Structure formats: C-alpha cells, structure tokens
Image (tube, rainbow, N blue to C red; front, top):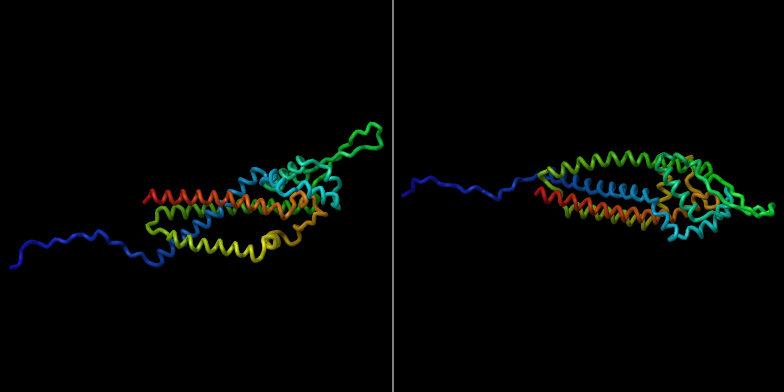
Length: 271
C-alpha cells in the first residue's frame, strides 16, 4: 500500500558551477600579467629609490676601487688633463651631478666641472693656482642627453603599466574565477630561468652593449674608451653598472615579494 505523504527532496549543497576553459585561461592570463607587471613596476620603483641615493656610488666607489682606476686612466685622457689631481669627494659630487641631470631631462650637463691646483713655480711664494675645467665633452653630453630622454620615456611607460596593473588587480579581486597560483608560479619560474640562462649564454656585457645599439640613435656615440672619456673613467664602465644592477634587482625583489604578499593577503581576506 503506497503512502499518500509527499516526497521531500534534499537540496544539493555541494554543487559547483562548471567553469569554461576560456574563463580559466583568461583568469590565468590575467594572473600571469599581474605578476609580471608587479615585477616590472617593483624594479622600476627600486630603480627610482636607488637614484635617490646616487645609485650607491659612495660605497661602490670603494668596492670597485675607482680611485685607483682614475689614477691609472685619467692621465691618459686625450681631451681633459689633471683629473687625477682631484679628490674622491669631487668624484662623488660629479657623479651625483650627472645623476641629477639625467633625471632632470639633461639640464645642467654642460656646467658640470672639476677643478685642480698646480703649484705655480714661477712665483716665489709657491701659491697654488686653481683651474676649472668642464668635465664632459660634446659627445658625452649628447649621450647623457639621450639617456635623459630614455628615462623620460620609461617614466611614461611605467605610468601606463601602473594603470594596467591597477585595472588587472581590481578585475582579479572581484573575479569569481581565480588564477592557478601553482600554474602561474611554474610559468613565471620558467620565464625567469630562461632570462638567467640567456645572460649566462650570451653574457651580461654583450647584452648590455646590444641594448645600447637597439635603444640609442645610430649616429650618436655611446661607447667611450677610458682614454677618451672622463665619464667612462669616473664610472669604470661597464663594471660599475653591474653593481648598480645588483642593488636594483635585490631591492626590486624585496618590493615584489611585499607586493605579492599584500595581494594574496587581500585575496584571502575577500574569501
């Protein structure tokens, strides 16, 4: 005999909506771009912070023994004389003036100078006479102006990337489908490994020179021998740039790690 009582159905509580492959790919692409832009902007922020302290020239000066480098090559310079007679403080001041100029659209490059004193043997008093000499010659000024213009373009690019990064961050925060953290980490690790292998295989110096070929105008000089450039001598180029790059990368990684941690913390709180 059948019961007349109505049948009751229990609602399904573990139902999960089916996510399309396109949605998952879009979420992973968004997540990867977000991580990549976070790294790029972290390195940019680190670069700007390093510029505020003169790229650490004061301590790198000692590490790279730039005083000995100047003492060796400054007397060989074909355009400027007696720079070897200048003090370490003058060297650091001149470098800082160059940094300030290239981060200010190249303003003031022409007035950067150094002074030295020679004993005047023609005077019985043996008083020292001081001579002021422009530090940069015309080709160096043109190159540093090119650097200043490049920095301006990088500033504009960074502003655009920051807007894209912010848009992706908002989309990711409110999106129902999240990126696969393990998948992004794997792809990102492979990308970084490929970059490291490229530097090992080709060489950092060769990459540095090739970037100059691609970036700077073909008719403008960017390579200077120590005997032709106090600028290159002062910077012990390209060796000094290696130390500066390490500083920028290390601080950039710290900023990147902090940004990713903050991003994940916000994600966890939302969940």
